[in-house]
Image 1: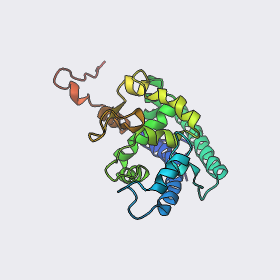
Image 2 (image 1 turned 45 degrees about the vertical axis):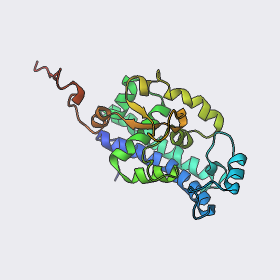
Image 3 (image 1 turned 180 degrees about the vertical axis):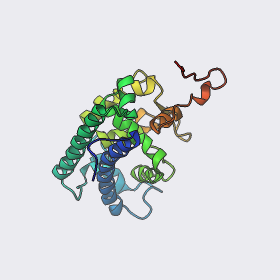
Length: 232
């Protein structure tokens, strides 16, 4: 029988990742429909048909945005809302049971929004399961692109082009995720001066270790500092 609260931080993180998984699965289903319609050598050259499709697609949205998902949007939203409500109840009960949830603590300390937390979870997923690297590569039509790009994060979390534009500020240098170095942006070496959407994200190693239960000092500080725990 499932407890009414999380006894460990990892239980909470895994539950949140199940919620993010639902978003990924929807995008994968839509992407698969697009891929099935593509020619065998799609990606090796740009055909006239692909140019037409690129011109016809909604601005700022992936090609799969117009594809139908096997599950209706209502069903997906209902399942997502139910999962979020269950997580919310269990988080509240965990607080009453004095259980510290590290993801919640991180969000509190750095004033993260729900969008920030979900972004962190999307980037954290490959640290728990390498299959996410394959999923992200599939969504980006490139087996070498194993880390989520800003574009992938926006596509997963934003329901419209307007929402994507509004959410771009969460990746500015003054946003909590980047200002406090919880996440880092990096470029594809083969793509010079890429736009923000083409940049990739990875979670800082110290943040990963903290979320997984480690309180060791950051390796970058070990040569000049030590962690002292008061005995009194």
